[in-house]
Length: 385
Figure 1 (cartoon, rainbow, N blue to C red):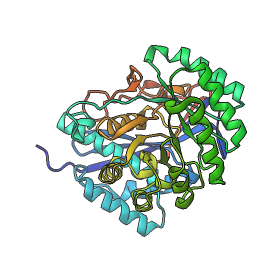
Figure 2: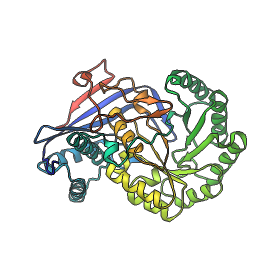
Figure 3: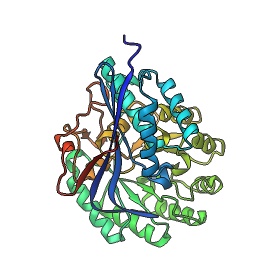
């Protein structure tokens, strides 16, 4: 068993991918995925891949901050033992303190590349590295951004047809914070899609009573077909979050309010949610995601794993992570399915309504040859370092 494998080089690239159509949440409309690819090479030729998807209001870092942090880490991590996760994250924390820049997404990308390399060295898929003998599979959602109620219903019909071959049984709906329209959105979608629904308000309900009214109306109309609501109220307002939780038949999950392990501890201490949405981009990768998962398990909280506008690189990491955990009830790992361009040569499985990890060593991913070129303006790749 190899006990030492030094980092030889870290490379980084901007990746810009045009979305097929604008994607809206309660406070932002996206037209592109603007991410960063991290490639770590070791002294003995092992290569690991990770991805950062910074978005300041959710991950806490802008793309500019992420790029600057990537440049610093590329210098500071050379010769570090990639097999020592604790040492690697300790060094990343030291870099954050010294530089004054905290980039959870670059930390996550480096973490993903680390696990990818460890799996390749040990000839083991990442989910097995995390202790799972076989993948724990749960239903995965496809997300519909905010549109008019009729447009969302029409999109739901299209998704039902497009993803029927994958056994799609859950759809996630973004909500706006407008009580009347959100009720109409959900009910119209429920009329054309017979499966389960998850909801995400992205902090849209400033008045928690409106969120409670939303949930009561929906529960009375369609019952437990709605399996959870994410982050109804403003980020960090745990009093409002707890109020909604205590007045809802539908489980309430913390998302933006549980960005990091420290945030998750506050949510648990306040007893403010029924579950936590772990996003590796905001948590700082698998290493800290596992800490959040263990905390949730200790306090009988359920888990889901979500994503930003990520490609198959970090979606693969999310799938391995999610399928290693038994207190997982939902995954929302779908952004790679809705991008125009697949930057992986191999396809990440979506079967019987669930995302499955690749069974090859590490993350199991292979980059597509298009990563070397510019495709009609829909894909732009620029080296950072």
